[in-house]
Amino acid sequence: MEMESSGLSQRFAEWAGVRPAVFSAPGRVNLIGEHTDYNDGFVMPSAIGLGTRVAAAARDDGQLVIRSEQFPGEFKFDLDHPPLHSTGSWCDYVLGVAVVLQQAGHSLRGANLWVESEVPIGAGLSSSAAIEVACALALMKLNGIVMPMAEVARLCQRSENSFIGARVGIMDQFVSCLGKAGHALMLDCRSLEFDLIPVPERVRMVVCNTMVKHQHAGGEYNRRREECEEGVRILARWYPEIRALRDVSAAKLAEHEKDIPETIFRRCRHVVEENERVQEGGRRLRGGDLSGFGQLMRESHRSLRDLYEVSCRELDVMVETAEGLPGYYGGRMTGGGFGGCTLNLVEATHAEVFADLIAGRYERAMGIKPAVYICSAADGAREILRG
Ligand code: GLA
Image (cartoon, rainbow, N blue to C red):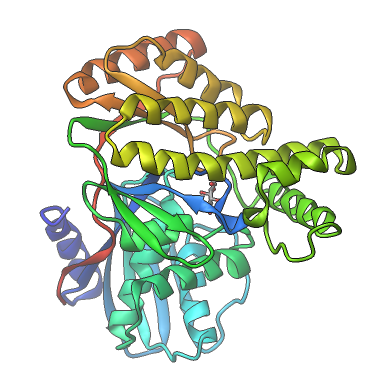
């Protein structure tokens, strides 16, 4: 990444006439713990080597000017009167961060920002969190704002919740800020305490993009969240102390199956069992039990498909298609679902062959050529070139 920032910095200098500072923030995969973060539960993501870079320099006229080579348009906003809700363009992910920084009481100078992203959009690899986090670091630096990385993650989540209107949890922004090379980050999404668990070196994370795009701001993601909240409201009649599905055990839930509408029950069951799978997954990964971990990934996928209903035909085919391939330990859809990518744990020595074979199998089954990335766990966001 460092090497490539020189091209970006040069293009920026030609555009804006000054040398920029450059910041990078990674996309992520989630090994296990899906749709648990907004239920105060547990997740286990890793940052990956695909990331976003932002080149930035201050302007004197109070304008925020945003552009990119991947995405269309050049956008200019007056920071004294910025829009307070999404404008419907990609630049919202940048603008939203500026707006929440202002709402948090920081005054911002004008800035030129040039965004360059290699995270595929709408593929469930957190392209939006990567843009938000890289831009947050850039705006903080230009304005002398210092805050802990966990706070940066919360701020970016707030931008997505209040500015974009997607009620996402904290996982993506958190791991983009605090991921560590060679590790998965097991995060308690209530306390934000986390453990770094080494991902054994002999394994690779093979990410397979179904090429079906998802859309979070759209209804289904938010609806799942409401269904979970409904489950908590019903269960609180018997257990007034519970605040989120995180506080519900499988036994408590099972006792009230007949009191809960069928769909809501299935949603709750996924979350409660998925939280248990993350705990068990942490033990297995630490113990080097990759086959055991792979088994939990398969169970997680089935649960997301049948109970939580956020998978789709293409994701299911990609997961089924991996079975029996050389070096495969297990896999599942990763991220919010409704399209996007699967994550496969594969023996490093077999990763290339696995990637070729799964691409061929998927293309034959679906008539779509997938993109496949062989990834390792990478570091979180940072400044990569001083201005
Ligand atoms: C998206 C959201 C996350 C999380 C996942 C599902 O990636 O941004 O907060 O809810 O979906 O686990």
